[in-house]
Image (cartoon, helix red, strand yellow):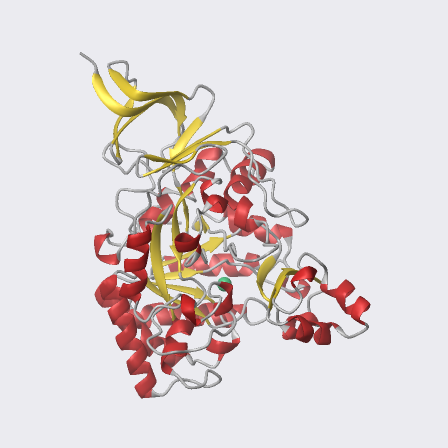
Length: 490
Ligand SMILES: [Zn+2]
């Protein structure tokens, strides 16, 4: 009598997510769980998959996303087609709630919200909408400090008063109670830049009570990056919460090479307080189009423009030439708009990718007309380009940075590893051919080599199209494990 499973994947190269060497074997799934691994001759699957020559890994965790609205409004093909089964949303200070009053959407919140109709009065409302819609991938959601400022302040070009900090603190505690996994800031951006360190510490106070995490797009990623890092660590210590440095990079040619300075500091701090970081595998960044960067960054590509949608994909310098105006004036004529900034050094990108504490986060912008290719290519690019072709690290190590490491840091219980009893979030891929195809010229393209993706035991990506059902879940704070900053220490 054979044991019955819903799915048995046979003869696969099993990559368990911990960084251990791959082993050859079979894997059985019943319902939403992995029930057996190894040589499963005495098991029969309602569906049998021959995975000879293919790898099976835990579904990838995209720790840095702006998928807040995309998980409601789209089928998430951009992520599922890369093997991503869980996203962390609400990064860089922006989330779709809580905004109790009627407030207009300001940049960079317009990266995720078209207008105030997309905002939710409470975080509980947002998570309930996700539950009702059923997200195509699992979602762990951060609450944005910029959103809290928008909810509580009449103007954003100043630090919050004690009363406003108190109101933000109350809204954050409510969000954490509803299931938010922590607080994000985007202190770099104008609507949060006037916030003092003390303001963020005051707002972040509930984090410790709820085992929440603090993720930050730091105030500065260029000349003053060291000060910005110290500010992040200080906020983490004062609020007794783990720190995630978002999309770590150093920008501007005069700072090229400075990851030699920043990474040892992060390694040192990580021995004293819980600290980690994420990175995307590209030497160009992307966000809203900003006049202040038009002068300092040489190559800027427009990703969307409300005023001139036809100019998406064009270089700002060419647009300015054609308009016969300065680049700053061209920026003004395109607003609101988004851009790709070619402003990093490849050696820095590789150094951050190789750093043992680095998790992979796409930072993809899902509503851009001509998005940065990281939206569609991040994970296959790390596996195919950086691990296999460049040889930055082995395949198992590449997988660890997108599975067990983020699952430990964010407390994603039962995810991020191949193990009996774990959730059946799985990626079947070809290690020989996996590769990103999206590039700056043609950024909306499926990657090569991702054969099938399962979310909670359901087919979520067939290799060519999304599965028939949306099978993701909202991962609420109180359902998570304690955030583990001990495993995989540097
Ligand atoms: Zn950011």
